[in-house]
Every structure is written in structure tokens, then in C-alpha cells.
Length: 240
Image (cartoon, rainbow, N blue to C red; front, top):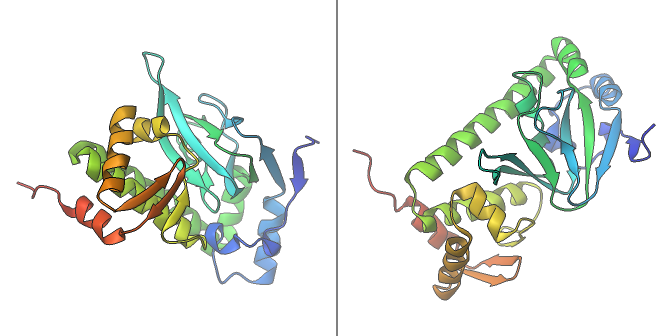
């Protein structure tokens, strides 16, 4: 067995409500425990899976933070998403049985390995699990759609404001502060994700700080006015 792989039990995991359906019987939870058999530890900078790699499992992030990225034709790293504890990663592999991006740990992380064939098998018996997997997939589609809208129609300030609001809302769902966050990604990675140049990201952060909307100390960000960020996001031109 891989030295970085350890036995896991969903039944005693404090993130259970975030990545498992609620309202299961003890017997059903035990069945899922049998499916989610192992955890893997990934060091910061390490890769959980690579573009083109055979798809076998979904991964529930137990601790840590990941980015997904693809290499563009001109050799640049294009960030396609950021994933945090309590979220499921690897859905990109379902369509063609191969992963379509790299998943890289932005800090030391631990994931629960969920072999997909076993999940499908169990989903047929435990309908709550099936509908939960569908919800996870749907959430991912909605998120990607949101990113496309973001990149298609928003100015730099609107993009960064929407990004910060989304991040803090996801962290808050995991019991973290509604106003303070530590950015696990670099300004450059944020720019890659939002379709902005590094200078533009830095300049926009500075403008938010000057306007008293956020306080920035390197990677520590404190949101002083959530309402101001929301106003920036909602200040989009009306649809014609």
C-alpha cells in the first residue's frame, strides 16, 4: 500500500455533511464507508491527477486547497478552477474516462479517494447518494457557467469582486469567517482564472484597499464592506 494512503471512515468525518447526503441510515453510511476506502496525502505543489490520465475516482478534499489547470497551445498554464476542503474534485474525467486537466495542491492536502465504479454501483441502491452525486455535478456546471458570464461581460473590478465574494461564501459554508480569508493562490493564478493580467489584479486589489472595501496584507484579505463588493458586481450594464 502507498505510504501516503490511509484508511478512512466517512461516519466520523467532520466534513461529512458537505460531501455526503444527509439523512442516511447507519447501514447506508457503513456501505459508503466501504466505498471510500482510503485517503491520499498530496504535498504542496504535488499533482493529484494529470490531464490525459485514466479516470478511476472522484476525490473529496478533506484538508487543503487545489487548483485545476490546463496547458494552453502556447505553453501557458490556464487556471480553470480552485477547489477547497469539503468539495469534490475529478468530475472532469467522467465524460471520456480520462482527466481533462491537472489538479495541483496549493498547500499540503488530504483527499478521500472514491472509486467511481463503486459509487455508481452503490448509487443504484442508495438513491440519496445518486441524487447527491447529481447535485455535485450540477453545482459544477452552474459554477462553470458563472465563470463564463464573468469572463464574457465583466470589467476587472467586477471580476475580482465576484471572485472574492464567491470564495468567502464557500469558506463560510465550511465554518470560516465571512470577512477574513487567506488566499492560497498567487495573484498570477487569480489573473489566469479571471482572464486578467497580473498587474491588473494587483492594481484592482490596491483600488479596493484605497476605497476602504478590503484590507490586504500579502495573502491575508479582510473584507471591510461586503455590500460594496456586491454593488460592484451588480453594476453591470443592462442586457439588450
